[in-house]
Length: 362
Image 1: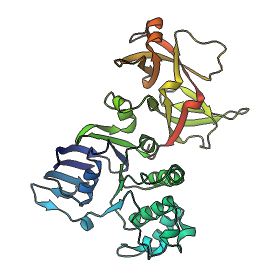
Image 2 (image 1 turned 45 degrees about the horizontal axis):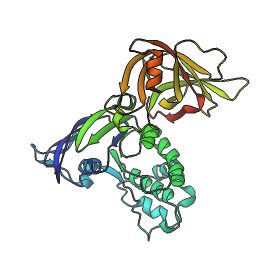
Image 3 (image 1 turned 90 degrees about the horizontal axis):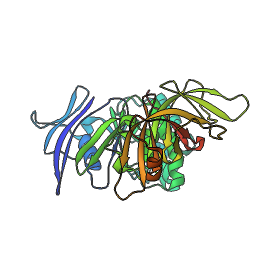
Image 4 (image 1 turned 135 degrees about the horizontal axis):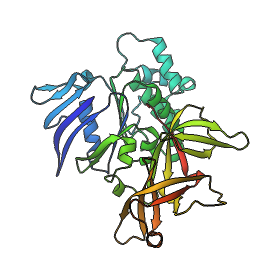
């Protein structure tokens, strides 16, 4: 595990984090501006020191105030990717990639990283001729070629416009699937986290709000207040089962045995994916609908009802064979249907509300 137990005074905010992150996959650090996310990453990389505490990567101490251990950045063997690419303008892409490589400069390793990030056609170009997304891919490649034990990524997409973000995300998804090292990924974008992360740490005013597997954190009461009405959603784990013989539809098998039909996906049968179902696209009814155009109608039970003062909407946490499914309905509907915990219903899920993201490590 990556064990973090540190305290550092940041102006009026005390950064106080005590958490253990997995040694494989992407651990996303999420929070509002000023929460302490970047300060935490700088502490992990040795760019800043905490006032007290300890940081241990596997069996190796990176920092321990009691043992007087504080390894320098170059001793920690961490790869950094910042919000801005920080490339050397007088080096071509090839030179930037090779900068900082240690020991045996394996040609095979260089070629593997170049192929992973799709940099083959950029090697002889200078940074001034690259797009923002291309620069970040080079920055990521440079970090990987230092053979890091941990990869620290601080808002790597924050400076990019939407087209450049969409350009870079597939490479990041591929990166998270193929690398066997811990990645700490700082972001204020929940969409990025949903597409990339396996584990999630939420920080507010320097303190840990919640941490755990992404699906667990996303379903938690602690995260609900952070989500806007449009972001309220459920995350379901599924396996691609089959493609319909006559229609452009794919059946997903949920981990609890239930099935969902979605628009045809390019995924192969047997692949694991994460499905996001927006709460505004889930409706409920007390009897099985007849003659509905909606493909996904599943039996559920009301597990929890969340109300918010001065809001006309209510959040229902439904149990779909022990998997959580959230729905937003009006107070009028809540009263008219006389819903309470334990009420058995049918949930109607619109197919267009289902979006998938890779599970890097299942």
